[in-house]
Image (cartoon, rainbow, N blue to C red):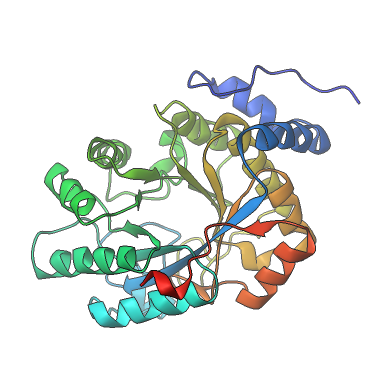
Length: 330
């Protein structure tokens, strides 16, 4: 079977044209190339990450996909809630650890971090999660340098701040924030020595070139993001994108494969939209290079796959769960 030959390996000089070519390759050829890279740089494990919304709703941003935006709250039926209590969050973290998660991610519906009691409480959550022997990741919106440094001092493993899409398409999805502000926050995270968790969403109306541009920006980062979430749009009623058609599962496979090829050392995280996939489609994504899944009942405010079904699937295809933390770690 003939296939397009593209210079792979650990590179930071990928072009949009190269990545677009990968995205348009025959699927079996693409997955084959991704498998070669995956086996060279990764092992046969899948990391389970649990995601908790620690502060839900009321965000002033107008991201067209997000039911937590204050712009769509009434229609989407997501009420504004205060920041969760530290002890309650740590109870959830312990439960996540008990069912196999080794990474605990906390999301707050903020435009930006503001110094004060709420941020101090988030720092306490980070310290508490780390004391359980788990990786801790947060997504809190935009950060200033001193805030990134405080998170690093608290032991934060990773900071999530997705690019979402290409710079060109970005303005059609969000008008309350500039693309460069996202890149600036990522630079503060990296400067503080925190791992970068950064990916995007497909299915919002973007084209293949937009997807390629987003991946190219990520692949040009030095170093590459340690974690790359690949999300499929969950079209939530009440948001501007509620009528978008479901993402073709094979497009998600392609995104996982190209993320693996262009960022060989990253954890490629199969994230939002996974509940819409069949077992077979999920296996294809894992074959294509995904090696982490978000695990548990909810991804912030949308449904996720059943935890036991996830464990059974991983076992059925002969993969291992990585970094399982024993309760004694507390």
